[in-house]
Length: 69
Image (tube, rainbow, N blue to C red; front, top):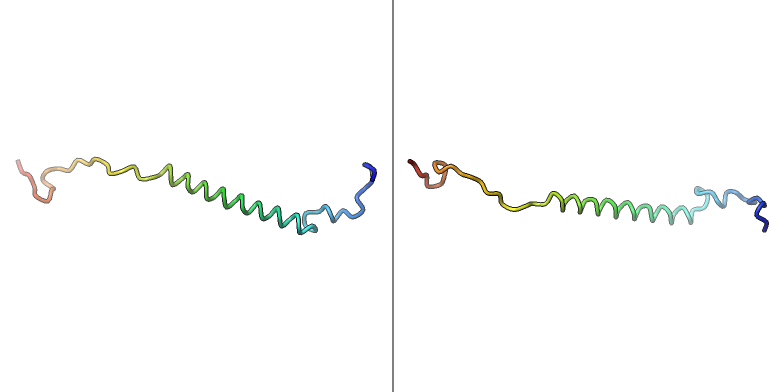
């Protein structure tokens, strides 16, 4: 086969007509998208995680047993 020889059937190289190559490509594209969304969600949950109970100053007169002056 010469390098200058044209392809006899151009539809064999077309994405829409070659369902085997297109289905493999779409499968890996779907896997990549699901992995990207999952990892992005995990990273977002990690960066916005609960840091612990904050120290809150409560006035003495609002306690369960109030402390008056």
